[in-house]
Image 1 (spheres, helix red, strand yellow):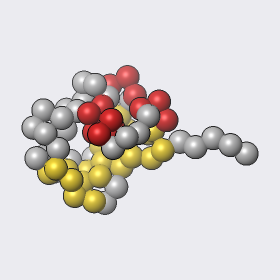
Image 2 (image 1 turned 90 degrees about the horizontal axis):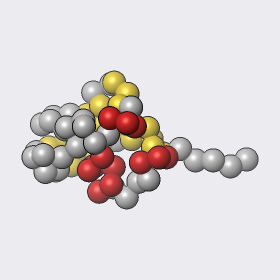
Image 3 (image 1 turned 180 degrees about the horizontal axis):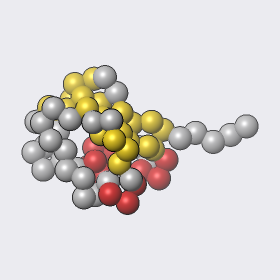
Length: 66
């Protein structure tokens, strides 16, 4: 199925979750914020949040430092 991630079209598996996508992209799930269709997905819900055809996701990485 097709979803849009940070403005780029991407193909994911039919049963993909937010957790699957974050892992596939190589992100540490503890250091990202994910918005799906303009709604924030709580980190605790990444495994249970299934992706659907046409979803629009924004993934932002958190960077520490000073």
